[in-house]
Image (cartoon, rainbow, N blue to C red; front, side, top):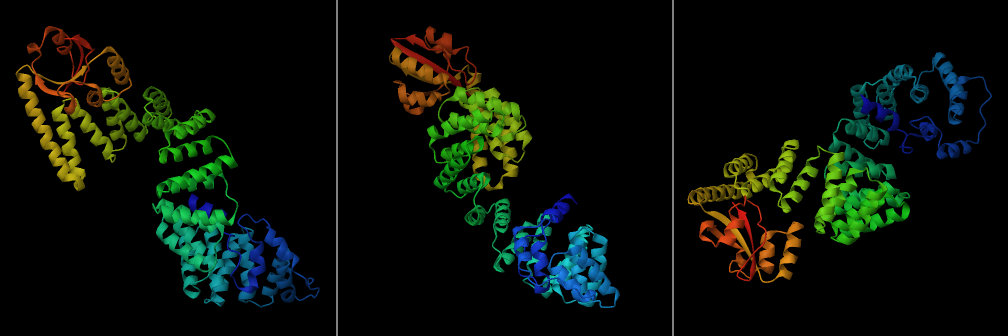
Length: 505
């Protein structure tokens, strides 16, 4: 009942017009918290007629009610009721005041009488529903409102009430339809647009959500959260420059971790990595304990090729959120790029355990197993993917076939004492120093071969196939024989050239 209680305490008091004239003044003073608003003061100021001094309570009660003198009005209405003057005009104000002052039992009692006298009065059913909701009789309240809506399809209070009940029960599509109907009745307030924006975003309707939020922001001065949400929605709809613009306004309004971090994310989305790094670093400095900024900075550093710095922030993020599957996955990809395959496998495996529906983690796990030459494990992983990813069956079948061919070739060649090698040939010490430095930062061996090697296999990424190391010159044998799969040899000089090898499955 917590969501219903919150709904009951916060949800009403927004619809302030469109009701029958007999209760309009009171509705202007009613709010969920029982506080008087600016509209209340204005409404009271417009009450020109003095309170009647006659003794007849049936004449006095309406004047007291219009003057917002509710204690006196209630006494007068009750006295009028005792005189046998029961009518909806007497009973309904009593319901309204009872709901306002949380005398729920009294509100229900008068509400029952009101709808017995006027079963076709939508207003009576609305306020009786309010009293029932106060007693946590949610289904009874819904029933009254649904009957009221049949009587008056444009009753704003009923539309809002049913919409909020639908939201409390996660019936978001129904809530959105009711709120849209409310909007068609002329209610276009910021709260309504914000609520519709939230619902649309929850259903992945990013463009609709952004439209509603932008309407709300045009109606009242935007705050920091408005700009941040608008930026995120802009990214989702592909308007990356719009996201940057919103976050710039956020920084102007309130510089700090949230606005810096948002602007950094927006710059990352438009692939302005240098600017992204500046603002994400500022966000981390402002809020070092916020995992979001650590994670985003790590990814930006990774893209920028600053892999050592990226690792610091990946580890900081995982120290804060050790069971985040996306964090584990991204860190695993980072490790794989550095050639730390076993560590990478552990991280992506953990990501898949934390979120079994994260198919990308399972795909990368299978790829790493294949790269490690753990053929049977890779094959099992791909077959598992085939069972849950019917959309990619053709590609997964081809992958299975490739692994089987590689496994059979590997077993055959290994039985003959051969190993599979990549070979890089460098012409001088200067190039060797460049390559060594890039290897240390995680640059792929094959890409360095294509860029720098003068060997005959450079166009194939240095793949020289399955080689029997005993058939090579002794200097090369010394560095090749000890290699494990995916391990890179130290450089060795032979024939006036520098040679680097990498063993692959």
